[in-house]
Length: 186
Image 1 (tube, rainbow, N blue to C red):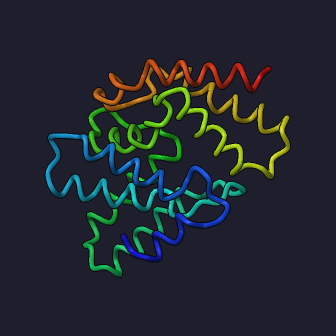
Image 2: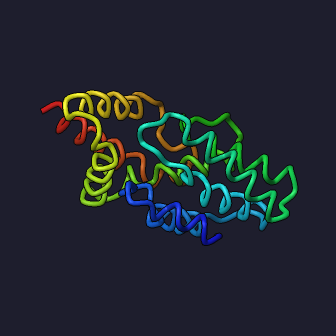
Image 3: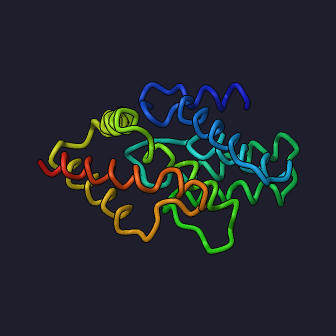
């Protein structure tokens, strides 16, 4: 997207939430069929901006990223309704829940979480990168907090709201998460 946006993803504190994550998300979006050109563009924009603001010491990253997307898309001349939809999709990545029938929302969160269902090696790299991003958190606190977050994914009826992503990733994601929780508790 813009050079400024690309620069955000190159910030030195980012390990997982980097340009590689955005490129991975965009590659996943490219595999999705049945979208109109406008829907695809909306999802592309939401993916580009969803982690634009990322500070692991704060809890408002999604809200700040959504606000930034609205401001920057406005400056690019994008009308209000598409900007609002991009912001809505970004905000869904905070809790990774979506209302039934919200196809774009289901795709947004499923794409963002696709890493959870990748190969064990890819998942382990992701988990290690997340730990690096949270290096400021003492190990015992990190282990307890991360295990609690990951446990919520296992307790959900489904991790992936989009059926095609669920078919591809649900089983391996659950295995990866369970394996990480076991390691965190060891």
